[in-house]
Length: 431
Image (tube, rainbow, N blue to C red; front, top):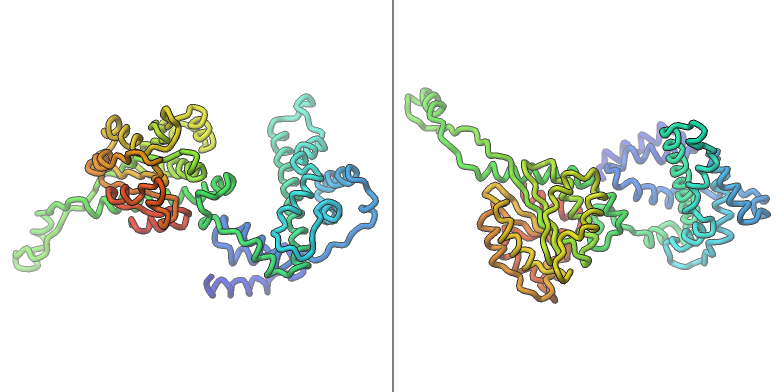
């Protein structure tokens, strides 16, 4: 974090009311948070070190039965009474979370117990019923969608208040530093693809779009640097006038290489399921930054999915159709890189030419089958470059059924690509 950011943050604190906790939170966020992807981590730290304080508790809440308390929660959420929602959350935690003092946990189990007791998954539907809107009463579709959005926001707000209240109690019990140590979650760009949840992979979509643009620019720049240069005779002669007619300084025509093409081969087998989701998202992000993008998926077979990637409105729809149609699967359904490369070299090599960069995305675990290096060589000889992006740590390459090192020797480059940050390093290495 730059010194100027800290100076800006201190100036912002001078300008806001320090008793206004949300105002302080937003002011510091505006100065210190540089990426939307880091906002959740910032909010977590803010709640830990600038806790909301102990809320006052209405003794009457303890007299209500569970269902009455839930009804009261719904009405408080419906009317946007955050203060009362926080008190109700505190009462629910008292009854159902079963917090054990001194235990070094992140509090997730306490949150889950409370959510289960209050049937949190049903809150949006119940809140929507309180709106008493029905298309049969002439209510328009837009009004219904707006009501659904309000209900979803209110339920999410309750979830955040619940998390905040559990964390406050943990901080009171063990201190902020101890709780922070158990809550240490990696930032999105440091989350490993192989272990990331589907939700985290989905949130990477916003990061991949600019990264796809940067990758397209880097490959175009690389091709421009290697494009042949042609002497501009007329400009050279004009320049030679200043040296008495001697062509001391040669002039060349501006290089205008055609835009690069891209072919993506993505492993979508179960062993790299999370990485496969990322690979498809990356393919989706790259499609608009190259003159041509051909996308293929494989397990032990090979299928082209360019049509799905280009026509589907979202990556979710693309993934669903690939899974439903079992694209990339052969007769056995277990990873076979050798067979996939052989199929590509035999049937799809015409999609590769001297302008094409080939990206192979996968862990190179071949189930002890023939890796068909000859097929990879055929692709390498025809393409401008072939890069292998592997989601496994380099220390695991070539262990067990991995043939990562063998493939690396036959590629332009092979890179460990376990996180967004490592993907950024790969793009930087190309530039």
